[in-house]
Every structure is written in structure tokens, then in C-alpha cells.
Length: 108
Image 1 (tube, one colour):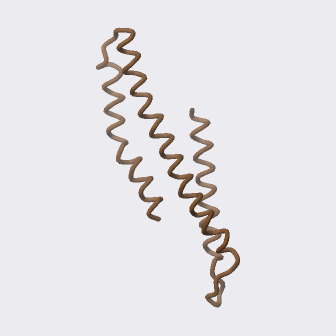
Image 2 (image 1 turned 90 degrees about the vertical axis):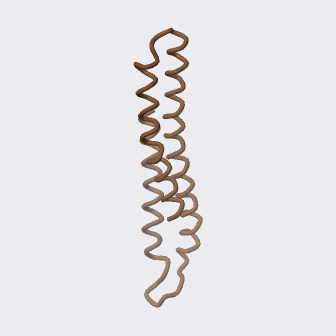
Image 3 (image 1 turned 30 degrees about the horizontal axis):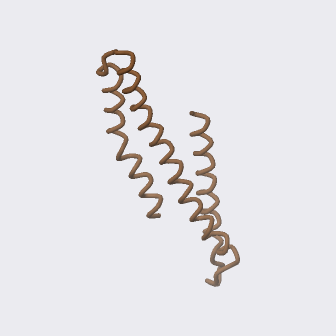
């Protein structure tokens, strides 16, 4: 899963960097819009969607892992306080970080 998340993150950062660099050349020195604007706008939308996809994929994996631990602990019959409770605690801690990252990119 780490390689998948790393690939998503690299693609996401590459798109965001491309949109940033293109944004520098959207307007020429005279203040006129250049042809770069035709690529900057759709690529910016794609970068925003890619960011939402990346953060959502990581969050959904994080949520599913806690559910898997809960189901496995029920099936095996082990104490859920040892495995499930720490996972749920970590999930609650990072929920706002995930949502803040998604919202900040979509607002930008």
C-alpha cells in the first residue's frame, strides 16, 4: 500500500507543480492572457480532483483498516482494547488533518 500511496502522492505533487509553473506564464508582461491559459485551467481542475482522490484513498484505507481489525478481533476472540481501540484513537486524531488538506486544496 505504501507504493500505491507514494505513486498517488508523486502524481499529485507533479500535477500541482505543473499548474503552479503554468500559472506563472498565463499572463505576459503586457498583461495579456497567453495560450498557456487554455492548458492551465483544465490542468488545475485535474490537479484539484487528483488531490481529492489521493487524500480520499488514504483516508478510506485508514478507515477500512480499523474495521478489519475490529472484525478480525471479533472472529478470533481477542481483546479489542489491544488492537481496535488504538486504531480508532489514531483515526479520530487524523480525521481533521485529512479533511483540512482536502478542503484547503479545493479552496485554492
